Length: 561
Image (cartoon, rainbow, N blue to C red):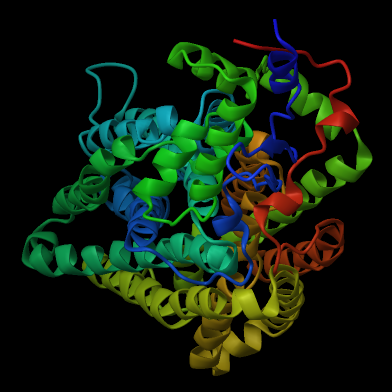
């Protein structure tokens, strides 16, 4: 082996050191400057330009989130219908423990899916996994709408619960995958805005769930008034409609190339990185420099055989022996890293107790405050519940999402999260303390307060708890850490789903609702303190959060192929 060969093998795999190359024509020395990793176009915080392909990638992710929200929150509208169909003997109401199980089982699936797909997204890669979650959702959604009873044993609600569990696994997988994909394909100057835009489709999913419900109730009005058993058609069609966005999106998810950042920083594959950048039609300013670098290497080593050149290039990019869970444990064993994960996870946990406690039970709350009283006809009660959900979503949730979309790059993620937790604390305290006066003398004011609560959920912690974990972790751990953070949130949602209906009925139907809202106020107050553990990603490229391998991987080995 020549000295030149030895020299070429010592090049740092992450960068090209300066090399002196003799120029036979001029006898001068040319210097190859140290080049960047090829991702500088994405990490430029001043770059706010978006390619059409980047916008399409966001649409692919956000359409899935539209469907996720539709499927999760439509159960809030379907459960009262199930009461009229299957529990007419119980005053048209499903028992509290069964209500909690039907509403909460999807969140159990969410938790499983978030952990599973988060780990797979980092260990296997984004490209190989993205789209599988939609396949699960399509199957489970159709099966949910077709749930029926066995001749003996398991009834319709039992089978519905099983398919909602499977549906939850698919929806849960979409959280870390869509957040990570959107974050890694976005330019630094627009990253928070793009992830927020993806998440904002949750509001439209809720809105269209209520809108489709209103349309179906209008179509089946006469049938329902003739016999309330015909509500059975409405809830089944309502659930089935959630499959349409998934069918429209699944092909494009499977066709999405590997994330350029994951390809470069984790797979160490420049070819896949360039393929990703080319797919997004992002100009890589380093391309010409890399070509110059290649020519100079050839000049130094003086190798003529093409296979030998490729061998040298491969030697410059060693492939790491990755053991994802081992590396994840090592990295987060250090407090400075673990506290960030603790901050994102605990903030999401606290937020979702109140958010899902209210979102999954808006129909219950609307009936409790007298907006959609249960003593009316089945059609009228369901109609009022759908209208109430539509109003709260249209006037509160959707504007809140878009305030975040347009202000997140100006205000910063932490500022919005602090503000959201603080205002939610105040609003929940007001509705808890003034519950009875508002209910009896100022029902419109009560509805306005609930609209404001939804507004500051979205222009607040509900959106930022989704954005921040997609930014503040290294690429090799990003999907897993986001999955853990989201799963922590779903643990809070599970508590809310299973406990809310039982808690509010302590002492009688809805008697404990004011105190429950007061508990939500205290929980939101705690979120202010957990936010302190999180760094502010505003104005930083994702390269800022990449890991220092020498710090925690001292015993890790690499092999050259």
